[in-house]
Image (cartoon, rainbow, N blue to C red; front, side, top):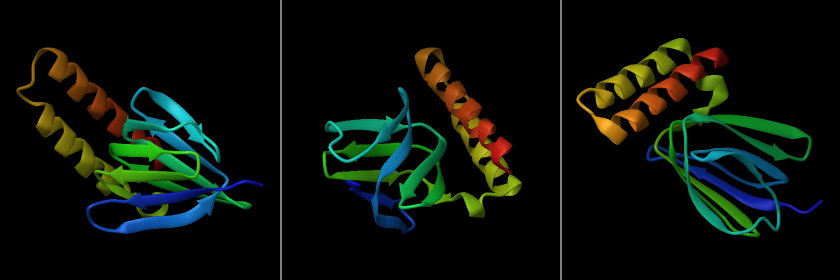
Amino acid sequence: MATIQFDLVSPERKLASIEASEIHIPGAEGDFTAMAEHASLLTTLRPGVLKVVAGSDMTEYVVTGGFVEVSGTAASVLAEQAMPKSEVTTDVVNGLIEAAETAAKGTTGAEKDVADKRVADIKALLDLV
């Protein structure tokens, strides 16, 4: 089976650098799956769960946003914040919600819509814990 090089980094640490068969990505414009020979693209992430399949193993990471670049042979995710799903607790998610709500205060118009969507996406992460 063809593979794609997958790298996931956040400002705090490098979380993954593996050969994967598929990567399920929470894109800002919709979720998608990247595999070997995927068309090149650069897009933003929304808060959600990024899943990486390598062989018979699947690893899940929670991301809060960032960028993803996909080419036919590699997928690189530069996350604002990222952590293995196993590290996500209710306290962690509540802290993310509080930060998003604080950032949303005082926004108006289209900025408010984007900020409110971010808060809603992060609140959905509570279903993980």
